[in-house]
Image (cartoon, rainbow over all chains, first blue to last red; front, side):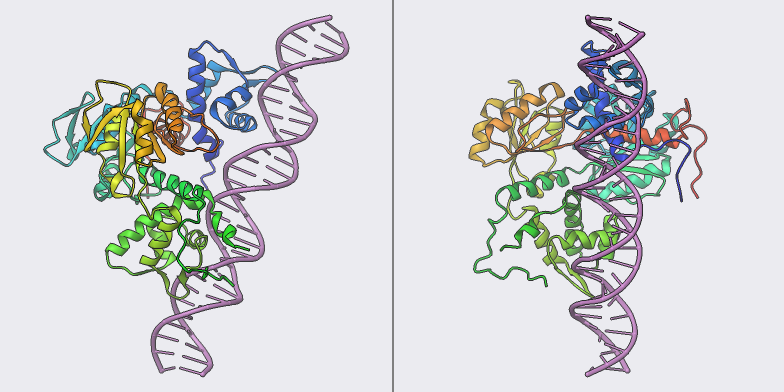
Length: 230
Length: 230
DNA sequence: AGGCACTCGTGCACACGTTCACAAAGCCCG
DNA sequence: CGGGCTTTGTGAACGTGTGCACGAGTGCCT
């Protein structure tokens, strides 16, 4: 399959940086800055200026040489490219610790991702209210997805229940999933999945800490017998 | 000369996959599987088999041709490489929604990252107990870090307070930071920082949803014409 | 108007990451 | 004990991402 659409494709690495630029641009706009150079934006984002220019060039030539980028216009273009011209309601599966925190975290709605619903299998949790949203039973998932036109689902269940949650989300018609459970979800290819795994992040930090310590503190006693790769 | 140099430099992409392999291997071990091929592990991890072999080859030659990898031995080697031979206590800054969820999430301690402490600037929150850990005032941060030998800090504050939180963590002696706040932290180069930004993840999904709609102009999300998957 | 200072957009080279393909190495069986 | 089957480990090709360097516009100043 060659998904080479007529529409220009933006590199993944760039797509993952656009939201960062967008937030910074929004802040600058709020501070009254109406023009910004790639160098300044790069400084704020902690990246290379050439990278910023190349990233933005995928959207089109919206800068002015000798001047920079008009902040508000750039905000508009980035938002358009990211599909943020309208809200994307999300549904959260799992009303445990994490689900509650996500529902209670106001930043979701503010950033264009209102919580259309939160569901759980546990009848004891159904009916309680989290962040202004009533927890519903997972059987109501298809109805929520359809009536609220939800295309993004959030898996906030324990690992053991995550695959089932994903299956139900897909069956209900969701096409993108944000997965917080520490498992690899298996879904149809057409479904876009992104994973956030706290344990993985911590273990990566652990690796660097261990390296920092000299990487040689383990010292198998008497062990000159390093693996002899011939 | 020590060929350790050779062993020491593991590509970032590989480091970020090792925790995934580790979890899968642990599960297999629990299920009584004592030998596994790169192909099977690749299937579980959702990646290419050659990639698995290359990743594991950075640890050394721990496989047996014609047979596969001995699960328990591989678990040991991966844990050693990731520095997971001992616990890494973490300290959480910010006892808001997210901080509470993190403290309450048992998976932290189970996976070798016990919560050594959770702190907040808000006196109203100090003293309350989250996940068995009492919230302390942020001024006690240096003491917690030193007495508990903490080297990893978690920033779970609102964006506006995150830089201050990071500065205090660094001042207290922390050398790695996991940042949940939606800002780019500025810290000394020697500090390892990893970022988890929910808004960014959702916006990336938004991009793909918007693209999926054929780059259509003003389609309602989850609109009537659902693309038929084969 | 012309020159100058500035900054974008991008070609190019290099680094990094992924995948293929295959020889080497081990096991099993007759 | 040798041949066949399996699976690893890795060289090489390919693709993606990064950063430099510089041409090409743009605005300002004289």
